[in-house]
Image 1 (cartoon, helix red, strand yellow):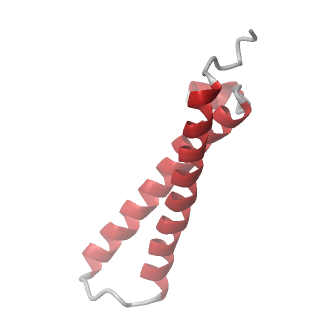
Image 2: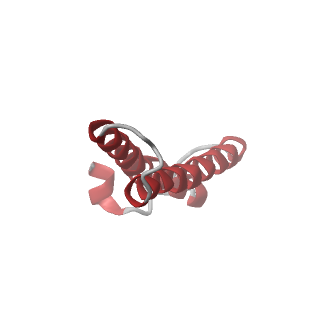
Image 3: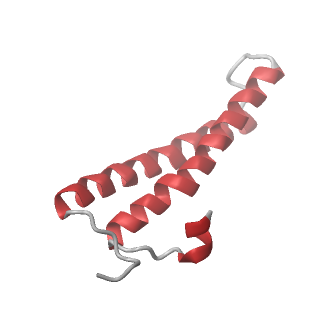
Length: 90
């Protein structure tokens, strides 16, 4: 086995890949909609501090999804590490 390959059985790899894909899709889409709607529309009648908090929370969650869940999905899908040594170190 190559050192960059992961040793995860297929019965575990496939459900985890599906879960990570769904979490990535809804995380990026949902947080993107929150950020877009909070900037574009004034539908929520909250004070400016609360709106800014919600925007920052959505942005932080989106960054987590992009930096953690999406690479996990990619790694489990191809069953080896393809993101390079720099991202592995991070």
